[in-house]
Length: 136
Ligand SMILES: O=C(CO)COP(=O)(O)O
Image (cartoon, rainbow, N blue to C red; front, side):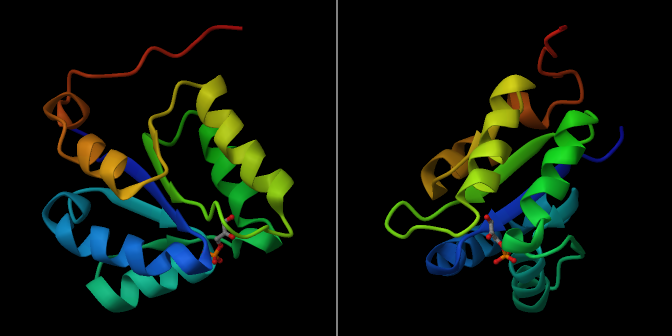
């Protein structure tokens, strides 16, 4: 079975929550291929020892690089703890990334609770489960 590819992204005020979450789910995450925006990926790698492919920082195009994976059907889930209380200079990129998850039916978690449910779902982890990809 090929590894699931998961993207990890968190805005600055949400990075501590993502790190706690990643440490709670190390056993699953270490079986997956992980990609992340630049700063998030560096922190996750440093704090957990997980191997993480780092794209550019979000405001410098990292969100769009992850979006490109989605458009190419190369991402299995996005864990994006975005900050609802602070405006981001690259808000259009944030929206575009979340939008592509809806376009291509990619599971996306924006809160630790949703992330818990996805990462522990037997369906999600089953080699037989493939989300339906819309045809356009
Ligand atoms: O801004 C981000 C997502 O929109 C995250 O980027 P960093 O991981 O580089 O902080």
